[in-house]
Amino acid sequence: MVELTKALRELERLVCPVCRAKLRAGDGSVVCTGCSRRYPIVDGIPVLLVDRAG
Image (cartoon, rainbow, N blue to C red; front, top):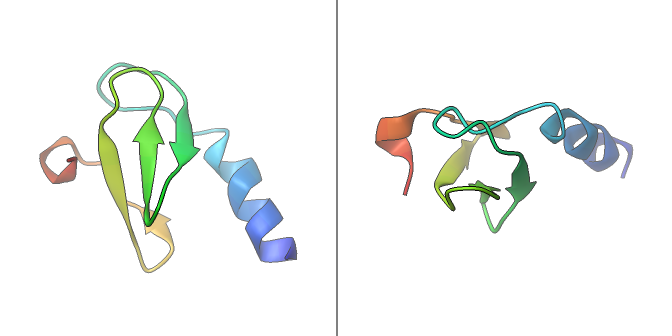
């Protein structure tokens, strides 16, 4: 539970590399609240590369 709380707190610091909007946790990904791009989470790390976004 502590690791999840820490991960969510760190997610608050990240922004979408395309539109700079905040990100929210999705199902196995992080989702941009601005442009709705979905970035995968690989081994617990969000991959914020535009060419990997869905």
